[in-house]
Image (cartoon, rainbow, N blue to C red; front, side, top):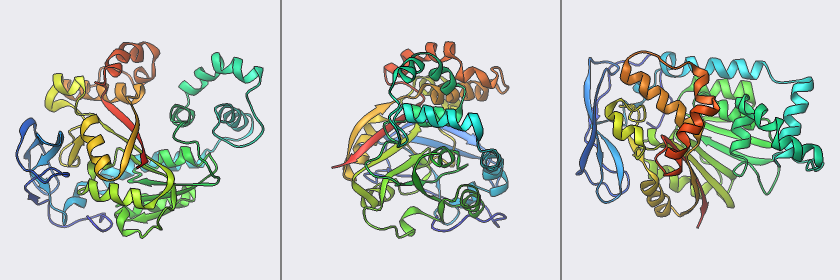
Length: 354
């Protein structure tokens, strides 16, 4: 892409032959075919092909660099999500709620201050805290990923590449961190800068000229699969990470059970915006090539259940489950065995520099 998306683009998407982002190979088995409407045209048939060497899925055909931004029109792709950021930033917690949130974050070691590991906190972590965390998107985001959001220095510097609706940056703004973010939408960048005080850059991360070792954490939260050159992004992430910094990637898992069963209806395909998809093996291979070592991989239940329910609705053509189901304990308990065998819809991985 290389530049900010335009709110009212002229012309339509153009396409080129797809290829593996790691080895450049163009051959492989067709895993799924999707026919969908695209901006500036009626419809297009897309294939996701699995590279036999790298186990990475690539889109064929894929949008050209010059027109890829047309798949992300502000008024359709960003605006509905940015409303959530404006609402969240305008209704920051205060009073008792803010003190309780701070206490919980302190109890889980996410904020500096007086130790909060006394009897009350230990008892609460076994009873009331999990309930409060479950019904708070803010606390859930921070607590469930607390190992990633603990830093060796404060204020920590965090970069999110492709921050989208900015809600992850919003959650991180409650910690002692300095926020940075990149997006291809100027509207999204302005919203995150004005609402959160984040230092945003409109364009690709490698165009931002960040300093070597500038960041303690680099995040690709459902953004790496959108990039036309994921390997370039990973190499750049290693350059800008501090020696003890970490890389956090969350992405759709093409090896999930629902993709195998529901095939082209699986939400993770999302052509033509998802250019590549990486299961655990492919992502590990890419990260290793870029100079990272995988620390751990998880399959978050809430995100995976949300993805599965969306896939079911897509396959049926209408909504069956209300939105609260994805957060319910019974739904997540039923899904847990799928996640335990590595077949969850969403994977999250943490890496360190080699």
